Each structure stands twice: as C-alpha cells, then as structure tokens.
Image 1 (cartoon, rainbow, N blue to C red):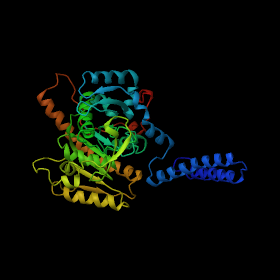
Image 2 (image 1 turned 180 degrees about the vertical axis):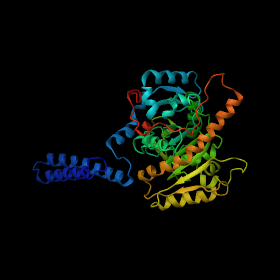
Image 3 (image 1 turned 120 degrees about the vertical axis):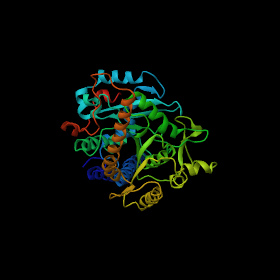
Image 4 (image 1 turned 180 degrees about the horizontal axis):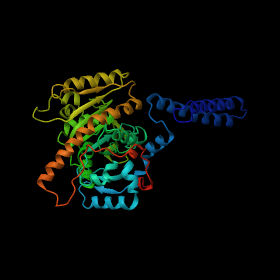
Length: 423
C-alpha cells in the first residue's frame, strides 16, 4: 500500500497537497502563503515522479529505488586494472576471509568491484554475481560462462538486482533445470545517472564501447574462474542496454556467442555526454557521429547487419519487446527479418506491456533459459579442449559438467551479507 507504486502512497501525497493548498487559502500573512505554496511543490513533484514510475512499472519497493539511485555502495569496492596481475588471488583471499562460503554455495555471492580499463582508460563500478556452483567442490575446475548484463538510462548496474530481480530469477531457473550456471557481470555503462553514452566510442572522446566490450571482459576473465571472451560469453540488455547489446554483438562478434535484446532500439539517438568528455562534467546533449556517416552506419544495427561480411560469424540473437509498444515491436521485427538472412529461427518474444519494467522482468526467464544452456555447452567444450592440451595431474578431479543442478536450497533469495556490499 505504501510502496512507490502503492495506492496509499498516492493518497498521502494528495492529502498533503490538499492540506497545503488549504493553508495557502486560509493564511492571512503573505509570508505563510508563500511558504505553504512552496511546500506544495514537493508532494506535487513527488506525485508526478511516482506516476511515471508506476506507468513504467520500474521501482516496486523503496529499497530498490534507494539502492539503484545511490549505486548500492559500490564506490568502496576493490579496484582492479584490466591488465593487472595477482588480482585473482586477491579476490579469492578476500572472499574466503570475509564471506560465509556455506551460504555462498547455496545462494551465490554478489561481489562489487571497480575496474580501470586499459583500452578505454575509464574507471567504473562492475557488479559480479557468482552462482552457487562457483563455490561447490564439484565445479572446482570448471571455467564458467558469462552473461554481461547492460542497464538502461537513466539507471545503474544495481537495477538488474534491485529492480529486475535477476538473482532470485536465475536461482529459481537453475533449481528447476531450465538454466545453467553462469557468472553474471553487470557494468556501469554510462558513468553516472546524468549521462546516456549508449556504449559508443566517440571519436576523440569517451571510449564507452571499449570499456564495456573489451576492458570488462578482459578484467573479469583474469580475476574470476570464467571462460575468456568468445562463444562462452553472452551479452544482454534492456532499453538503452538492449541497443548496446545489439550494437556490441555486431561490432565485437569475436567477444560474444549470444545476445539478448530487451526493448532495445537499433539506431542510436542523441547521447547525454559529459562536457569535453571529462568525468563528472556537465551533461550536454549530442547526436553521435554527425560528422562521421560511416561510423553512424556501423553503429546502427538495422543498417550494419546487412553489411557485415558473410564469413564473419555473428552471435546468436534473442529479441523481446512489449506487445503494447508498437514502435519497439516494429523495429525488433525489422531487425529480426534482416537477421534472418544470417540466422534461422530468431526468437521475438512479446509479453504484455509496453516499454516497462514488467516487460523486462517477464523477458528475463525465457532469455536466460535460451542463453545459458548454450553458453554452458560452449564452456564445457572449451574446458574439454583445454584439458586435452593441458591434462590434469593424476588423481585430480575434472570440473563437473554444466548440466549438474544445484541443491534445493538454491531457490532461496540471495540476500547479500555484509561482505558482499562494502560500504
């Protein structure tokens, strides 16, 4: 009732606003009339924000709103460089000393880090979710596939956890055998709520795509027990993140095997960039590539997908759009038709709703059900090839096959313990 979408919350705002208007009418002194009128702007503004939130079905709890808008405290997370050394040992030591690995083996671990990219030279927060199997002995030698999840704008990587509920959704799917274990990687793609960078490399400016598609995978593959970038990596996103996923998949086809596009668009719109490309600079609106028509085509999936040489193996695509948003459905259908020249049977999932959080939450389960078993096959194949090249010592146990299901307790909601969020 009193949540950000609750009827009670809206009624309270209306009552407070009406009371303040009554004060304006009844007050005899001008100073009190002005003061009450100014105060009345607060519930009026909050009502408007709450109405927009309800329309898009985004924040469902106050905790989700606070965590997403504040970044969840990742600013104090351990910092690593994409090309750094000894980072993996430091992370393993930190996890073993500061978390309960019995709990981790049941619900997994959310581990925030901060990465400085060697190609982009950007420093951003990245949230890592290690599934329960990562801490189980049967998977000790298994190198996990990865799904890189890209948020919308305005937004932050914590939206996947706090708004879209990706962790309990993923745990449930693994528990019932519909999804296979994978490490989830959720980077900050915009560098702040004020910006909308669209994961693009701007000529002479911010190299956002390099950070998301090169620096993050390079760092994660060095820091965690995962497959290197390639067929065992997937990329997925919603709204702006959906555009990012589609554009990255076409421009960095060697880095990913699968791509999920949830309510994405396929030609970039205006970006919101920090002035002069400086961190924390004043945001300015700019249409990308106005002086570079070739780059505009290359970063427009609807235009570029037919221009990629046929000998380039593209990642497999999965598309979703809310059936009530005719624009989203039409552009996704057009992109699907063009993809049909290269890929057969591309899914276009159309749940009820528009360009809203409810559509993205509804799309998560079928997308993960489609993507993670295929990623697991690629990871298992890569481990088998590696094992033939570098046989394990006598007496060692190979990693478990990805088809193994987690225990019953894996259906519990992953509630981070203190070490998972470093304040």
